[in-house]
Structures are given as C-alpha cells and as structure tokens.
Image 1 (cartoon, rainbow, N blue to C red):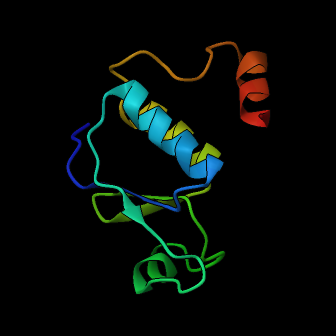
Image 2: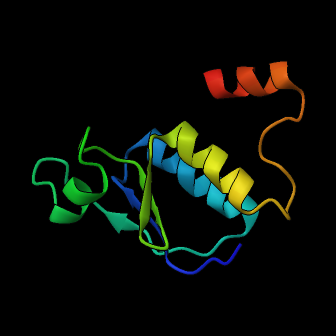
Length: 99
C-alpha cells in the first residue's frame, strides 16, 4: 500500500504515540508526525478523533485510525508486504495486543 499522506498525531511523552512510531519505523514507512498540545487541542485532533479527542491518531490518505493497538494492527495489515509486527499464532497475537 502506498505511503502517501501518513500522519501520526502525537504528544511527545506519550508511550502510546511511541508505539505507533515504532510500528511505522519497523515497517519502514515514512511519515510526517504532528505534535499535539493536549491542553489546547487543535481542530485537527477534534476532527480526526471526535469521540475521545485524544492521541494517538494515524491519518492515512485523509482517514483517521484511533487508539494505538488499532493503529498497529492497521499498519501491519495495510503494509503487509513487509514482515508482520504481530505473531501469526492467534493466542500469541491476542497476548501481544494485551500489552
């Protein structure tokens, strides 16, 4: 899948945001990270995550994916030509998502 327009919305000390950036790096995906101020939320975060209004959010080709584990799974499936981030065994995959 093309890498066009991959934008993670993040807040620098967030371990959840770091999880997303690590997954992108592991897959070799280039991206443009946008840092958010969680006290003065931008219109972009409010538009891309209207339910929780929180980070991390991955914007890919104008569509938003929210929550770090959902994002990691999306990255793994969208860029499936590279080695998988999650184990192929169902039980081990469920355990990886639990962390």
